[in-house]
Image (tube, rainbow, N blue to C red; front, side, top):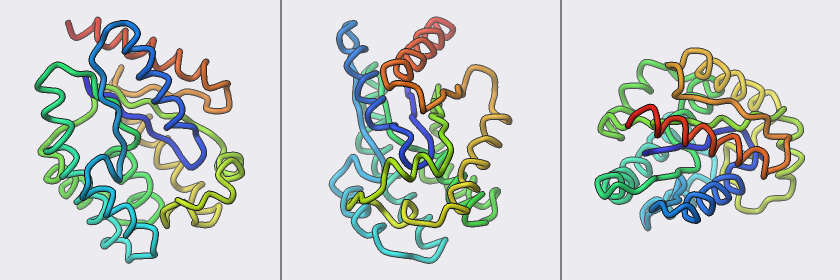
Length: 203
């Protein structure tokens, strides 16, 4: 099963993903926890490039290059072995950040993303939703932030609107929205419940 954690800056995706991974491992499941951009040697190098400002399409192609490598090198092999893959960000980030916030054409982004992922989509996307101002306050002073994380508040408001639009348009049971202002343990519990429900539905 392929599960993705999405959300704006400061939503707590990495923390919650780690908690979910630990719980699933305690239950005896094989779990791979990864992130993007990153998760591979090439992806981590691309992450460093993304700390500097790029044109919208250059930024997009950098993200997609990292994603293509991650899918081929890490995600698909793990899924083929029956491992549960948890990923901090995936395709929904591209549509929220580069589409809705940067203003790039959504159809062009969809085609480029489909090529990079070879058509792979998450079985479940957990959207950790938080007011952008509150999320940015959590991230204040972070030194590792890539360029998108340093944009103005209005940009992050558009990102949140992009996530909301995707959530509204999603097929039933493929997305959940969780209030990211709740304690991390409660957020993780909601995601775990959705994973268990989704796994039961596809058996």
